[in-house]
Image 1 (tube, rainbow, N blue to C red):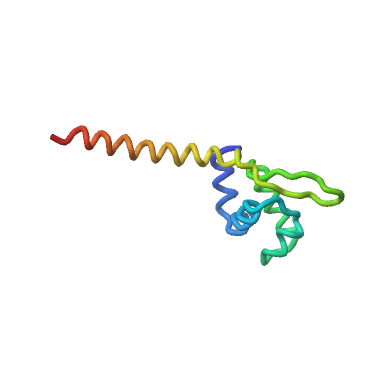
Image 2 (cartoon, rainbow, N blue to C red):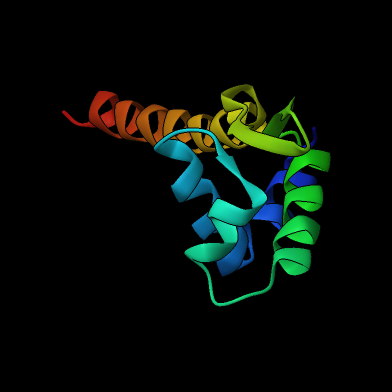
Length: 100
């Protein structure tokens, strides 16, 4: 899981919708597809991208794959955003320290 892969995966509205559904709990491909304006094969392709980015995992339940979020997959994005926040805080602190 790399930052570019996570950002690319999150760059698609359908994939973000899938992640929003998975935030509420594990879902099968069929259950995910019911809530989306795309076919089950399309959902499967989106899940493949999300899995390759490290954002989702799955377990097998009979003949179905049940997908779930992998919160660790967001770590590269969180670290990148935290670095921006830390830079802003450091800049603000330097500004305050430079004031008489």
